[in-house]
Image (cartoon, rainbow, N blue to C red; front, side, top):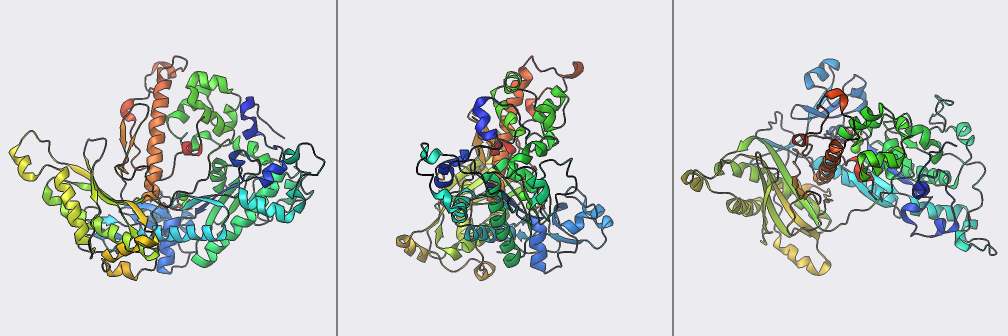
Length: 615
Ligand code: DCP
Ligand code: CA
Ligand code: CA
């Protein structure tokens, strides 16, 4: 079996066939170091496209794209067969596929209390609504929770979840192999006694795609039939037994999602989050891929490392040029000491990524302290008081709809309401908040009034502005309203619900759907959900709210901004180091601080860095 040499302290994480003891089967506290640890990542195929296709009752075999203004944001697999990609321009896409179904996402418009599929939505007057996708996302999350009651589940974005299968695997192992319940009575090591050898012939889960251990020798055999022969040529370990159990469980959950909600998914299963996420795209759509420990080296080695998220930028380029390398395999010979000498102590995570090491935990997000945020990037900036009301009304109707939906599963009550505005040229948003209005009949107008009051407190009025030429000109390019500290009230607090009057909108009240907000704040009383203070340089970074983001994607964006910023510090340190040769006499490759800053339209998923806990 192929191995890489690693410093002793990493051996546990990297050993492809670690010893499994009785304790690992019986103890729930072995955490990320349990050699039975098995993680799944499940991602919806072309998610928004599937949602729209389901909503419209369109045959899934027909090509369909989802549009946000003039950008394709989701392309289903039949449309991809025509060569259409997310980057394709709409007129080109229509030429490539004349029968293409084009659906624009729903939008809110001033004066309307619910999102609609407007025939001609305009970025200058409408605001994107992702309510449908968020609702479907929550229904899917509920299938995970009900079908996998003992697994740890972490919603990672609007269309993907991580599952830590270790606990259900322990339970199933004990059911199937009752002899694992206790070590032999005479064994001196007691619970630390290694398990007996695993079953001689493992039933590799048939409908999963098993990544081959030796892809060169086995080209073309990684079929859904189950590559029994290939797999059997490398003896099964207890971790392979664990993977097979996880494969069965996740397959059941994915079937339930398909049969009850009508969505297809793709999934990856491996020993940690990083590898599970990576291998989830091994075969798409509607597939589940499993990466055995034994298959990790040959799977990672040929991978172009600049395709690994977070190595796609400057850092990846520096590595590629420094070592004239493209693939992970070409960088494996560099030892940790050299990497750290050249790239600083932070390069440990790069070193670990290349070896598939990740000790990040799957953590369910806490159900309390949630916030709801509606945000609009303004193609036409707000320049005077008179421009504000229309957007405040649009944002407040969106939040009112979402709050009412959330209330269908219990009495939720936000603690505060906040207004966030971003002036062109400022790095951070300005925010102001106030207690949520306690009124009997909560209508959109009550919320709008509270927000307009915040606006007056936050901004110099037009009149004062006119009178005082020193006040800088107003040019607001983003406006957001948030409900913070949204909590489900306990039984005893329920009477507060009486303060809530009738629904603010017909559409919302008729909806049976659940909106649970997942974004949590460390300090909901005064933290702005749009900013982050860097502990290294104390710079306050602002998260640009891209039109239409929901809390999950925004949380991911905040992660991406942090990652990008840390990348900046890292690259800055690199650029100061003499040991790095900067290409033949040109200063081009120097990292310019001016080029840093939050990614505004990047992929809405966490940077790879979030998979890694830096030591
Ligand atoms: N999305 C978006 N803008 C982006 C990327 C994604 O609005 N730049 C939205 C639309 C997608 C959804 O998020 O449907 C999920 O994103 P994915 O990256 O998972 O892509 P898809 O689910 O569309 O396709 P795939 O089948 O490749 O996962
Ligand atoms: Ca997806
Ligand atoms: Ca995704």
